[in-house]
Length: 247
Image (cartoon, rainbow, N blue to C red; front, side):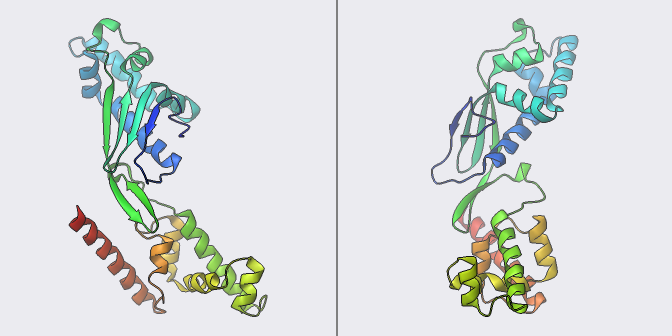
C-alpha cells in the first residue's frame, strides 16, 4: 500500500503494476494544482462573495501547495479520502472538511460536506511484460528504467570481461555471474548501441515504450549506429500507431 495514501482507500485496476512513488507523484501534483487554482477553491467553498475570505483561502492554499519535504507530504496525505486507479484515469477524493480545517475556512462558507473529486487522465500501455499507466499531463521529461539501465551497465561490464580475458567464453561468464548461459549472449550486444542511444537510456530520455524486453525483441541488433536509430524510431512509430488503432 502506498505510504502517501496509507490512510485512504486504494482501488487499483487488476493486473496493473505501478511503482508507489509513481502514483504518489501524480496525486501530489494534482492536489497542488487544485490548491493553486483560485477559481476552483472559491467555488468549492463558496467564498467568492467575500473578497477578504477568498483572498485568505487563496493565500493559505498556495502556501500549502508550495510546501516542501515532510510537511507537504503530511498535508497531502491528511486530506485524501480515496485514490482509485483505473485503465484510463487516477481518481482522487479529497475530504472537504479536513481541507477546510487546513485552510482555516469559516464553516458557514462551506457549500456542502461532500468530497472534492479530482481526475487525472491516463493511458494504459503494455511495456514488455508489464502494464504501465502513462499520465501525459504529469509526465516527467525523464523516465529512468532501472531494469534497462542495469542491462546496459551489465552489457559493458561483461563485454570488458571477455575482451580483457577475465573469462574465456560466454559459458565461463555465465558460470561466474550465476546466470543462464544464454542470458549474456542476449545482453552483451547492448554494449554496441550507439552512444546517443546509450546516453538517452542512462539519462531516462528513451521513449516510454522502450523497455528491455522490447529492445531484446529487436535482436540481432544492427551494428551500424544509424541503422539502430532508424530501427528504434520505426519500433516506436509502430507502437504509437497500434495504440491509436486500439483506442
